[in-house]
Amino acid sequence: MIEIIKNLYQFSIYIPPMDFTIHQYLLANDPAILFAAGTVQQVESILPDIREILGDKPLKYVFVSHMESDEAGGVFELLKAYPDLTVICGNLAARELPGYGYTGKIKAVSAQKTLTDGALDLQFVDYPAEVHGQNGVLCFDKKSGIFYSADLFLRFGNALGKTIDSAWKDEITAIDAARVPEAGQRKKLQDALLKITPEFVAVGHGFCVKCK
Ligand SMILES: [Fe+2]
Ligand SMILES: [Fe+2]
Picture 1: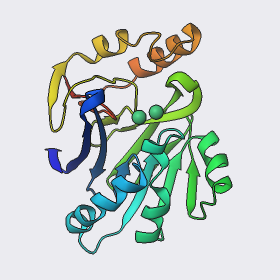
Picture 2: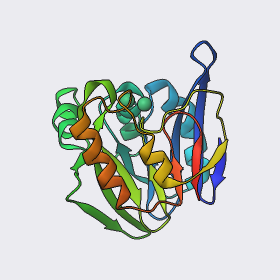
Picture 3: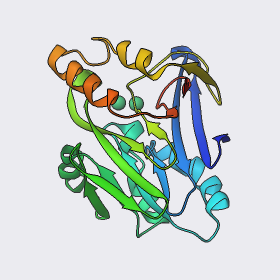
Picture 4: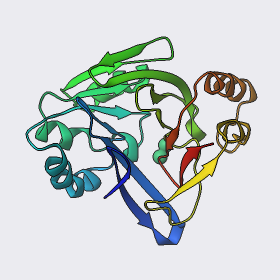
């Protein structure tokens, strides 16, 4: 676990055969939010750290970009640890999770919605998530300038705790068909991203981006 920028803790695993990292992030503000639930195994390993960072304060939110094990798998374990937890996710995940037996609070969001709560001022971007083209969401916290990008700016390499400098516009231009195969969806996503101005991109995989 690394405090990659102030109050933002990165939890990572590196998979050598794939040269691939998987990250989660705890924004330890009041209220606290975890970006990506991680897998069950990840949650088991990071819960002691989360408890240590937050102390008596609860984890109020977990953001789930889309339904995949690295994004959503750990919600059950997190709920056991924090029974008042709210999952923030897209409409598809909000329909899917109860079908898997999830009984905790769920808040469905989309590009039209915002969520303001204490130190959080969240805005959402609709995200046709990778190969599945599924109805996912990305999250920008306007107060901290942090954007959680899930699989969007995926880079290979051992990126634990590492950050690169890049222009936000260049990152958006570089989104190609490997990330969002359908041209119309890709253009719509790029246009939506141009409307926000993050300072720091907390990526689900690869190197975080400090925006120039
Ligand atoms: Fe994914
Ligand atoms: Fe992912």
